[in-house]
Length: 380
Ligand SMILES: [Zn+2]
Image (tube, protein in one colour):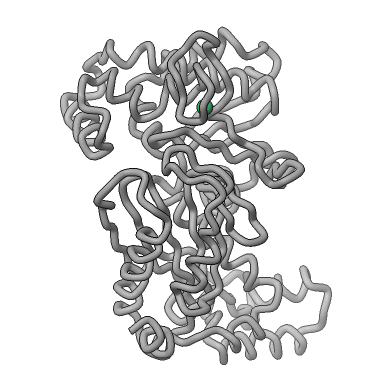
């Protein structure tokens, strides 16, 4: 925004905006530049924009068999990234903390000693208690009531940690910065090994009484279907999760890499090559989406994670499946798409959770945060 726009939106005078901006410039949070084009006479108002290099958040995404960690600058720029495979599926939380700590150390090495790290946001496929990051239930990680937030905080020597559900964070990032900008009603479907959902309703995240809303992967779509890791049967994720995609493609269900590689080979074969094995899967994606359309009347449904790579092959089947379950009126208003932030939606959402804390009081937040140099010494 320009200084003039800030003055108008905040309803304060120009000198107050100048003083506030100067304070944030001194802290390295924002920078000012002359606008690209000038209209009319007079001196153009300076544009105030986030400075991505100096104030940073670390974000981690815990998958069933891998951990991704990125360093994100203010404004959402990914500055550095690392990925590590986990040796086992269903890894103990302490082992995951060790991996996260090592990867955080690696991404910090890419920054200058004086840069400020505001906190660590962590996304994982499970039901998370927001207040303390306790993982109440993550069936595909094999975790129940694990105090993961407390373990991480201890393991990262006091770096502020926020833990959240991967799909909730993906929905947040897409709503603020991705395909869902300006869309007040959207559903983000995070399809990996399991399937989660993040819902924005009337412009706000749908949380539910305990913050656990959106477990759409466990909507039952087939009462006599396959057993699910949650203990139920015929859940949506048994029909469209990674195991179902692997079954359809005829690859081993154990590795998401094999599934992604096979999808890549199909893509290289050309967009017109039909993939009949995936038709049934596409239909079931659509049946579940239709249920969500009936429930929340979204403007936009984003298919993220592995589903982002599946969707282009089965868009017609998804649409047909949706129309078998969705009522006509809400179905007329919905658009299906893939995330605008691509494969980074969940990671950027985890960083967003850190920024939201900072935005409440940026000056105090930056002044009390550790520098890269301090963190590196603490993490050894
Ligand atoms: Zn289930």
